[in-house]
Image (cartoon, one colour):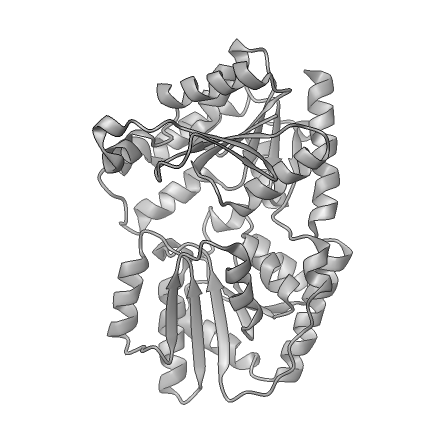
Length: 395
């Protein structure tokens, strides 16, 4: 089985979980990935063998990274994927996300292989958010154009054999685009049950309330609203500290805005990208509240972030905007508090509602229970295997 991943590997949480699950189920997994770091072309890992793009050293590492960009129909990706297919004789190709889906369809047809589209997010909406915030860069005009992404998605959806989605709202969206429900399976971004079993809800008394955000540093994710709320809370006498975990195109800009708002190291810390997921989760587990400040736009309303379940499994309450999937799950499970997206006043008030350690303990316990009972990778594993078996039988 091949998993076609459009970035460098390792690591990616979803890629690792899916590949490890299928590897443990008896499929020899092969991950075809980008290689901007010029790592070895092939590497054996517990979740499968990684086959990276071979470096073009004569053009230099920086330019080679640009030439590796997964832009819909790049021949370099098709050649590498076809080589791995010929070498490994897989049962199917799983492709994540939209940029490489046409490549997977083309190679799959040539080799008579079913193609499963792992739609981790609404890619056209993701690109539109970048453009709406004015953060598009030079290359984006050609290879990350939201209008082109819409056309590519409409080309791909009828031609893949099955689609994996991460949330019910995503399933509803692609059903409206004409994909039959029996070709769609929900495989979410949940953690293993064991992570929740190892957690305990927090009940500590502390003069400082510690919030954590883990994810990409992009304006489209509502982080400007979060920084303004932290500044206002501290101005009004609340002792609030924000941990920011992750890298991204707007990291530098957000650091500058924090300085403009007068947020020093005692109010906010930018950790940047942390290579180890375990190290990032350790910081999460030490916080009092996990924040999801996403804007309530087409992207956030049709995807679900890993961090929601990471916060729940860590036993800390979730403070989320009213983006549809996150607010729905938080309200259904009773694991946190919802505020109006892009509304600093609403976010400030929501933080104040989490001032009580007793309330945080209750909300954290609800998150742990939800992960143990239903929102866990073991449940998603069963659906993943069933989807794969059904696709292979049809194919």
